[in-house]
Length: 104
Length: 368
Image 1 (cartoon, rainbow over the protein chains, first blue to last red):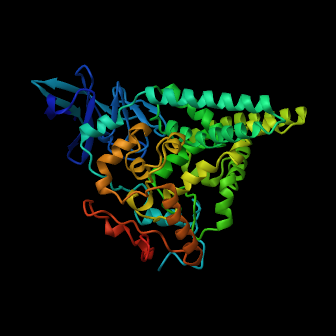
Image 2: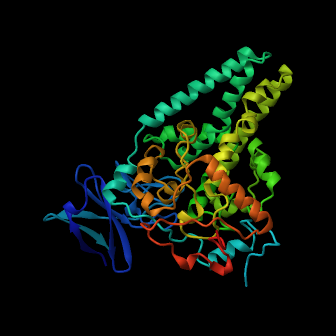
């Protein structure tokens, strides 16, 4: 069963940036676009299990810091080798200045 | 039991027992040491731009056209020789750094520019663009981990004549051309299968056929014109113009530790002259590149300035670095287990000692 989970204050993430969010034994990457929208994906690259939150956000893509593979963090699509497998995405929302993500 | 014996050549094969050994020891796909860089600073270092790479690439192509057309115009005269030597380095050396940076996707902000230059440079450097993309990803995952890294240039104990031959592209181009020929026949070797996913293998075969087709055309042109000129312009520079590529490439990891999880121990940063930095796109900052591969080549000097307090002192020049490397290689011919120790400054965070003598391998070098 899924539930909305509080992540952080919206100002804790710069525009066009990402942070790591750990919840239980899971890790997520939570993004803020240049116009303030929020998104969430699995936190680890599907190629080598590297934390994406150390990577580079450019437009709607996240680049893995280890091998420069890229995903569209809004859809999870794998865009550039060496990533081949899509990234899981999760609903994210802003509520009273806080970011929440829905995880199961 | 000590897995290394100075009387026996180490097994660097990706399909030999050292692959499994690295996995069992936790050396494969492991967590590596990183110097601390604040996120905001790292974001500014990672920032992508087309400007610098546009300028460098335009200059590269113009120089290639100028020197190449001068060779054609002056062919038959000794005046062609200096242009040929310049063309050779621009083709046979510069291709490697452009292949490398565009393969990482960091040179340009625009994706298609990275891809276009990557494919052109892959052809020039005689590397299958698909196989080597995956090979290089593995090199970054398992840098100088024996049995895992397909890009270890200097193996212990070294055969010095083979090291010297590298400066004229041998035996590397023989391996690379053989791999392209094999791939073009639809064959992907067992070692290549270790790092190229199945879904990518058909692409490797496709690009190998394109490369072999161009080489076949160049050979045909040489035969029809009964002149070596087509082969001096296409493919040949990988022999007579690769000396700078090899000179810098051997310094990246040569003589340094194997089977460690800290790039400060197995990679080398060297201060070099501005012309070589342009040819090499700043890969002389090699510790920095391996620690933070998402930092573009033009930002590496800034990254170096930020973290040098945490790194071994760089070699002050190419000559000084070669002094170290030649000493290490000569010693390894007698004492194959020897590697150069890397001393950290007092301001640096210490090495993770637990990774320095795994399975009895004296990774830091037994002494100075």
